Every structure is written in C-alpha cells, then in structure tokens.
Image 1 (cartoon, one colour):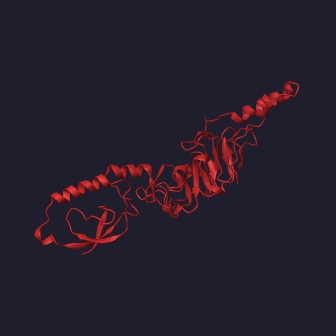
Image 2 (cartoon, helix red, strand yellow; image 1 turned 180 degrees about the vertical axis):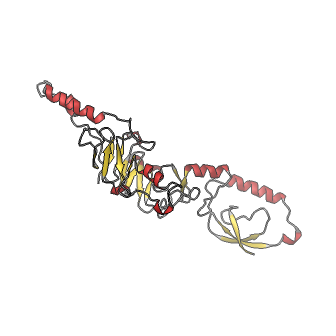
Image 3 (spheres, rainbow, N blue to C red; image 1 turned 135 degrees about the vertical axis):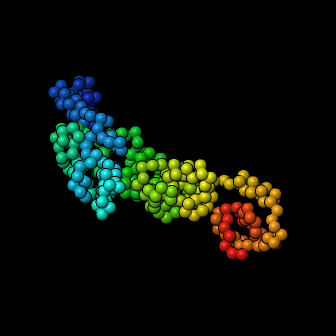
Length: 293
C-alpha cells in the first residue's frame, strides 16, 4: 500500500484560472482559502518530543490516550510499572485518534472530521503514523512493514537482511539474515524499531552508531557478535610485530607450538606460542584465540 501524503484540499483553486484568464468565483475562492487555513491551523504547534502532530492516539491495548506510541511504550514499560503489566502498543492496531485542536475522537484518518484540520502532513494509514515535520523525509517500506525516515530514494530494502540500508551499501554490504532483527549487542535495545542511528559493521552485523563509537573510545575494535575486526588494524598488527620481536620468550616456551583460530578469516593454524599474541599465518591478523596446545 502506498503511503498517503499530505494534500491541501482546495489550495489548487487559489491558482486556477479559466481559459479566458478570468479568476474562479469569489465565493468559491473564499471557501478554498478557509479550507486551506483549516488544514494548516496549528501546524508544528502540537505533539510530543517524538513527533510534531495535531492528534493523540487511543491505545487499543489499554484504551488510554497518549501523544504517540513511543510515549505509550515509555510509560507502560517504566520501572515503576508492575512487570506483569508492562507492554508495547500494537501500532498497526490503532483505530481511534483524538484531534488536538477540537478534541474530537474519530477513526484514524488524516483530516479531522469536525474542524477540518490536517492532523499530520505525513500520514501513513498502515502504521497509523502522523507527523507534521516532513523534513524527515518519511516513507513507508513494504518490506520492513513500517515507516522509515531519510527519503525513499536514499534507501533500498534488502530482503535477506530484512531491513533498509543506504543505497551506497546496495552492492557492497555482506548479507546477514535478519541483520537488524535483534538487540544492539551493547545497549540491548531492539534495533529494528530503534530511533537511533545504526551502523553496519564490515562483517554485516549491526549496532547503534553511538554504541560503536563508545566501543572505539574503550579500544574495542572487534564485533561483539562474531569477534571480527571492525576496521583496518594493519598498523596495530605492525606494532604487535615489533613488540613480539623485542620480547624474548623464556627458554621453556621457545619451541612451544599451539593451535589458533583466527577471528578475522576463520581459519585454524599451528603457530609458535607467544605471551603477547599469536599471528594468523593466512591473513596476518593478531585477532586470534588459542584453541589447542
């Protein structure tokens, strides 16, 4: 289903002229102006910290009224709420909205049936989403089943990964089935519906951008899920080479061999044991772990 976009009913009449160059009927022009003014009334003046919108929703799960689904989920999953009563709103099941200007409760629709105000310049009938801030470039992704931001032309849906990625990754990202259908490995927030920016690691796994930056600040350069290096570590491996060359092993360990598994290339090899680190003989990475010996 195509996402419904904001339509200013009657605005077209303001610039409509007859073939002879005559303006439209004066009374009709006034009616069109009034309709346009009603649609625009209160734009960007209502809403919550999540959305600028001119309506509230009645949650189908608990029948309470909230500014948006995020406000509901924050309130109903609060630590002060009995754990047995905590829950998220089933967003697609929202059926009733309340106009913020006139207070009329009605079925989900873009324009208020009472005062004629547009309750959200962006409106998705599937997700029951209203938003006056269209600078987000919202669009509905049929593959994800939810609305995304950033502009439809800037993203594509990968059906194997099950999520939307930047078009710059279309031919280069490694596919990981259900790549975003899991919790962030650092903060444990569910990534698929997260409002925070997400980074795709070279291995194909996903993580919050801020969580990834925090990892790097703490000198953590391996994916928390598969342990592969998340950036070019060649300069670091050169320092390991120098440190190992400068560190003489005790005599009893000089001929000791161990088996290692490389986290980067996935291969196993038998190498000389060293207290500093063991180097993969295939990809020259020190991102390894001892498995035998």
